[in-house]
Image (cartoon, rainbow, N blue to C red; front, side, top):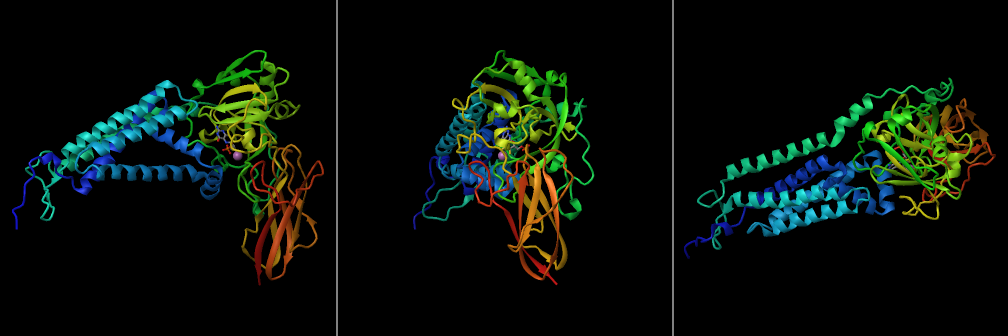
Length: 528
Ligand SMILES: Nc1nc2c(c(=O)[nH]1)N[C@H]1C(S)=C(S)[C@@H](COP(=O)(O)O)O[C@H]1N2
Ligand SMILES: [Mo]
C-alpha cells in the first residue's frame, strides 16, 4: 500500500457534486434575476427569460402551438415557462458538474446562455438597442457569480487510491456550512432582485392606471332581453363574465401598458397621420356593442367563443379622420409586444360594421389579458384578423405588401367567421336518463345572424330546435330541443343556417387555414 498522496494545489481539488450543482444553479438564478431587474429599468420585454420564451413561441411549429393551445388552453404559457425553467436548471446543473475541477467550463456555459439571451432580445422586432443591456447584465453576473461561488465551494481531498471523502479544512475556500450560507444569501439576493424587477416593471402601475378609469358610454348597448340564453338547459350565459372570457394570444407575459403612456399611430396610405392618446379616445363618442368574438383555431365543438359588451370608439370614424388613400385594402395593426394583424379595410369601413377601438368590456376598462388599454374588435372576422390587443400601431397598406403574424405561418389572409353550431348538453359520452331530455347549445354566424338550428338524433330526420331571443346579428344564439329518448346509445348532430340562407356544411375541415367546418356530433347513452 502506498501512503495517500496529498495534492499540492488544493484549488485543483474537485468540488463535491452537490456543491458543483449548487454553484451552477445559484449563478444562473443570479444571472436571470440581474437581467430581469435591468429589464425593469429599461424595457420589461428585454428580460432575457421573456425574450427567450417569446422567441421559443415564435419558432414553435404551428402544429405544436395548436396542440399546446388545445391541450393546455390558457395555461399553455405557464407550461412553456415551467418547461424553460426545467431546461435552464438542467443546463445550470450540467455547467456546475462539468466544473468540479475548475470554474472555466461553467463560466463558458454561463456566457453561452448569456449570448443566447442577447440573440433572443436582438431577434424581438419591437425592442430597441438598449434592450441588449439586460441580457448583457445577465451574462456578466452569471460568469462573475459562478467564478466567485466556485472559489468558495468546499473541496474533496483527492486521493486516487483511497475513497474520496469531503474535507472542510485545510483547503482554501470556505467550509461546507459557510458555503451553504454564502450560496443561500446569493440565491436570496437573486430572488429579491427578481421581485424588485417585477414590481418596478410596471405591474403595480398598470393596475392603478386601469383602476382609475371610469367608462360611461354615451350610447349603451340595449339590455340583454330575457330568454337570450338557456342556461338552465346547459348553454353558457349570454354575456361571458370577463374572468371566463376565452383568451388566445402569443404573449408570454401580458403587456403592461399604463393608459397615460398609450399612443396609437395611424399612418401609411392616409391623407394625414394621426397620433391618438387615451384621452383623445375618451373625448370621442363612446358606444357599447354586444359582440361574440371567436378564434379560428377552434375545433368543431371547441370552447374559444365568448360574448361581451364592448365599449369603444368607432374605428371607421378614426380611419375616415385620417383619410384612407385609394388602393389601401388592408389595415395592418401591431401590438406593443410585436404581434401583427391584417384586417380588410372593406370589413371595417362597410356602413354599420360595428368595428371598434375598444377600451371597455362588460362595464370595466379592458382586462389586462384582453388588451388593456386599447384593442380592436371587428364583428364577423376571426380574432387573428381583427382583434389586436394592446394595440399601438395602425398602418393602411395593401394585402400585396404586408403579411401579418399568422399569415406568415400559413393561415389565410382573409378569414370571415364560418356559420357554426355546437352541442353543450349532452356532453360527449355522457350518460343521461332515458325519457324526456332537453339538449341545448349555441350557434353563431356573426354579421349574418342565425336563422335556424336543426338537430337530428341517430341519423334520423332533421328537426328544428327552439332559438333564444336574438340580441343582434353579431352575437351567438342559443338553441334547445326536446327528445323522448329510448334507452341505449345515441348520436346527436346539430347544424345552423344563417340569414343569407346558407346551411353549415357537413364537410369536415381542420381549423387551419381559415377555420374548422363540419357538424358537431355527440355520442351519448340514455339509461333506464
Ligand atoms: N396582441 C395580440 N392580439 C391578439 C392576439 C395575439 O396573439 N396578440 N391573438 C388574437 C387572436 S388569435 C384571438 S382569437 C383574439 C382573442 O382575444 P381574447 O384573448 O380577448 O379572447 O385576440 C387576437 N388578438
Ligand atoms: Mo384566434
